[in-house]
Length: 298
Length: 295
Image (cartoon, rainbow over all chains, first blue to last red; front, side):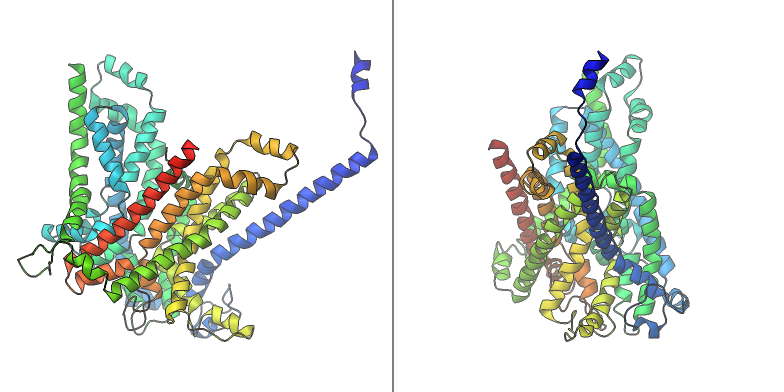
């Protein structure tokens, strides 16, 4: 038996060994080249943001230096001091946070309920309603924001967080995302068992369905937050007084001012950018999961 | 009996969401369609029905046509830059999935997509700046004359395309990565046994199999390209506070007509044009997907 096995095993020749080594070396070199390329792409993608943060700490003289420095020779916080003194930057950030948090809560709540109902209560009426939600999903916000503006106006909520919120209360994609999750990850048997035990529908939703949807709702929350945080067209028409600007609008209008130099602009931008990049890096998995599922339409 | 109780719960549960949805989505969409057929200048009480006159006027409106051309160039420019680059970068990141750097590459490419738009645009404004910007400094270093990037009508469109592509790339890469992960490994192994090289299986296997994804990403990129506004607002606004004087885009023209010229009906007809463009793009996507399914 052992003799037979030994006979089957053929020693590779020296040539074959050399060929293997050559192939492995070639593969290693290819991988190295790919890594180099991807590294360069990554650095190029990040470079504008890195320079922006670097510029925020530069003196006007150093801003002009060529080649531009990544680490300022003579770092100064003067830009930050003047920009914080000149503009209500912190107030605008506060507006943005309030708007984004409220929008996130509204979107998560409406999506959770609607997604669950559309996923598990397959009545004809519900299917028609779901088709309606889906059909409007392709209509860009910009198409209907003018009538929406007049609704906000007649409600008397222009120039307030409530006015901002009006545009970001529901998210068709969020409802779709939660519905997919309900269908794939909540077995009917579980719900039936609870019903047999005498649980009410509302109790089932609160105590069984919501905990099972935690992951999907987390991903949706991150998406919704960033969506509101980076909103531009809606805030710029609804929030038109200096005290109601979101940070995006505030910055965009601030940069058109006469006396604004790049150093101060960079400082203001850096104040906004750094927290959102940190937040993204922390929540990266949630975010990627959410965005990736936008491409998984069935 | 039980079924009726469940139906009642479903209706009661969906009602608040449905009400909000009708108020902030359905009604405004319907109102856009309706207003596009009226002449309304906000101030006056009467709102005469004028049929398709708004649309007829649009066909001869130079500002609108200018905006339409610019927006179309921007949308397709972003598409042409983004899709091939995203496909290649995603393929390479997927190839190196098991390396420790894969997470870094993914994050680095994706960060421009999530950061707030205005501060990010500010970074590019500095890069393109005629006097202070590193781009011109680099050009003069190589003996090429400096350009007035943000004030030249053609160059400023290019600047917007570059900025939009920089932001769109990360999303496309991410969706492509999802696509690559769903491709059957066995097919690639078979191709390898038949002697196909990496680039060959990329060209003859990955690209055809990822066609539905390419279609999806293309439509998403085009639609967001047609809605471009903030990028043009920030990049092309000058110190006099005249946003977008250099680069007119559809959304800007629409907002200007509505809130500066008080021609709401006219602006609504522009919104309808935007909607038709988006619908046509989506229909093309669906019909191409169906064709594939049948073939």
